[in-house]
Structure formats: structure tokens, C-alpha cells
Image (cartoon, rainbow, N blue to C red; front, side, top):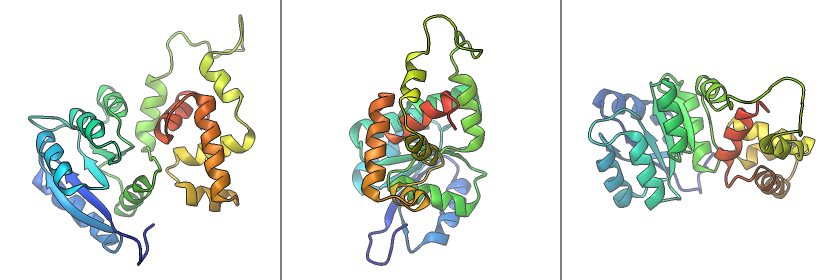
Length: 230
């Protein structure tokens, strides 16, 4: 969370529905001391242009929009402005939409039915490096990313898959850290929850990324969900 001496998290809302944009902005007003709404857009092309103009820290992005949808807009934003965090905020639970959203590079994923206080948490935690995945979406990802030829019975043949081997290399504490990452906790929150230093958290994350052969928290969380580690 931000404090009195910390800059506010700048947020842009992207949705083709004026009423939805108004609703989201109203929800975020509960964290007015921490969040500054800097812009809003009604479709992807406009969102890309406004990101370049207002430089938000976090973009709340709808999926289904005219002209340019949220998936393509997110891909473009992450390509041009890799430091900008994107929270996919959608009412869509269609499997294809969810998987496309994950592949677009978004940092967090939640549904529009998310309670106001949780949405504020998602925005602030994502701004500070965490990822958050709505439990309903997580279930879709777990079911759809599970390889069709995977044998979930007792291990047979040559041994574990490449992905499972990566998880087998994780220490018990690294698994603890990874579970908290999938719940959207940032480094400070993980440090407090596990009673370890921030430097130790960073070291665990570095080791987790190396062992799982991923580059960031979101990819690690997705892989953990896929392998049913959480």
C-alpha cells in the first residue's frame, strides 16, 4: 500500500461501457489517498494513445471492446510500455477469452463482480509487482492448460515431465513463497506473512524463476496453477 510520502498509483480505466467506467471509478474512490485516476478510454486504440500521454502505472482493461479488443490492446501496451501493469477486468468467463488474456501479457486477472475493496487491493498489489488471479479464472486455466496427454496416475516410464521436474527442485520454503505469489501478495506482504526478510523473499523468487524457467511472477503463478501446486 502507498503512504502519505509515496506517490499515488496512477490508474487508467478502459471499457466501452460508460456506465462500467463510472462504476469502476466509483469503486476506486474508496482508495483515493492511494490511487489517482488519470484517464479513461472506450477502446484499445485510444487506450494505447492515452498510455503514451498519461503514463499510468496500472491499466484496468476490459476484454470485449469494439475497434480493438482488450487482448490486442494489452499486447501492444506491453510491447511499447513494458513497465505498465495491466489488470484484465472482465465479465467474460469464456475459456478462449481467458486463455487469450493470459497470453497477452496482462499482470492480473479479475472479474467485474470483484468487490470494491478487493479491486483496490488488486490494483495496488499489481502496481507493486504482485499478480492476482480470480479464483473462477484460475479454475479455467488449470483445466485448460492441463496437457491432454498427461498421465496423472502413478509415475511410469522415463519419469517426471520437464515441468514437474522444475517443481520437484523447489524447496519447501520456495513453495510457500510461490503459493503466496498466486494469491496476489507482494514482496512486503510475503515477508510479513512468512516472517522472513525482503531480501530473502527476493532470493526465493529468483530461485523459483530459475528453477521453473520463467521470467516473472505471473508466469510462475500460471505454471503453479497448471501443475496444481496451489
